[in-house]
Length: 196
Image (tube, rainbow, N blue to C red; front, side, top):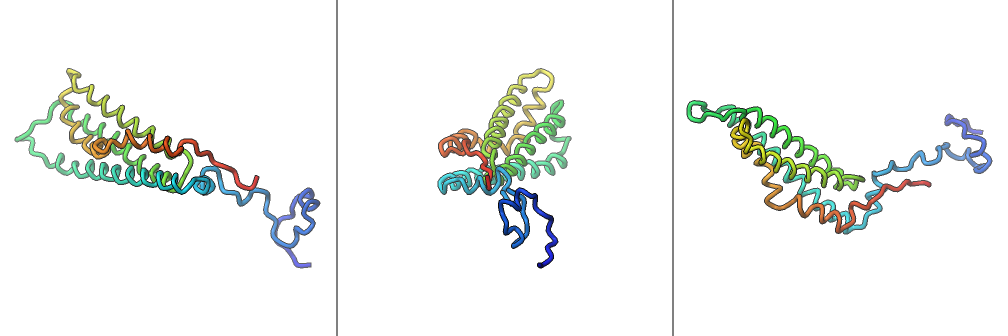
């Protein structure tokens, strides 16, 4: 009898499968795909895959353009001539805070758009939540314009820090992306376990 280096299967497995010595022993479900990975992508129809990838592409491209806009505005702010333009009070803290929020949104959207492209579970809901958070953030920052203390600084920083959001807002991405997800039932996908 050939020597097998694999571990011995449990007695119940030997009783059910007498020919277990013909190959290496693998515990049940050892090779099953984890929930939310390739088994979810395989459960989607071709139409759902195309719809999800179209939205993922738009989200990724617009978020990348937003990141590019924010990073490209930094050198011009650092090299500005204070003798010709005086920043309003609290301009720099407002710009730093708003840029942090925007770049965080863009980074998370790029990450979840790649997960949506590969058919990962929960990506469509995460993108919807991020887009809703962007809209809420945009209106909240606009309301701060009327604040007596920091209003002028926030208003001046809004155009510079939030300019990247306009790429998504001009094409109404926060409006139609959730509609596409709902229409093609991309919210209803559930991970299925392989192997029983």
